[in-house]
Amino acid sequence: MASDIVMLHVRFSPDGSVTEISERPAPNSAQAWFDWISLNVPGAYQALSGGRGVFRISREKLDELRAGIAAKTAAA
Image (cartoon, rainbow, N blue to C red; front, side, top):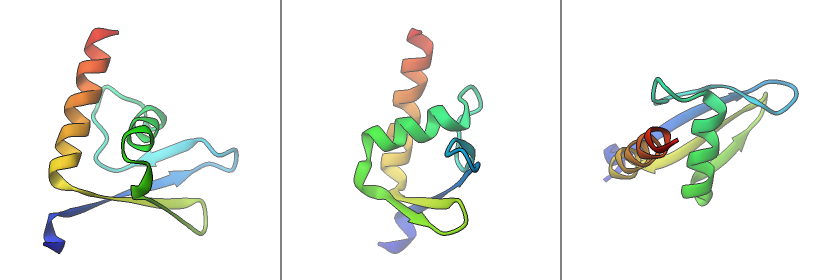
């Protein structure tokens, strides 16, 4: 169902680093969250113009990603 898909919006600085990304867990940087999603759901990203992009993922996958990065952060 289309309503189960979440769009995470990403903004990049001119040097390619991530400055903003939606649904980011508070303890993680924007770049760390982007890297985590990119590694775990590589086919979900779509580049847009103007230094922007979006990930389209299911709500369940988003919850799984949040739990995974929380566990990784806690272990570090």
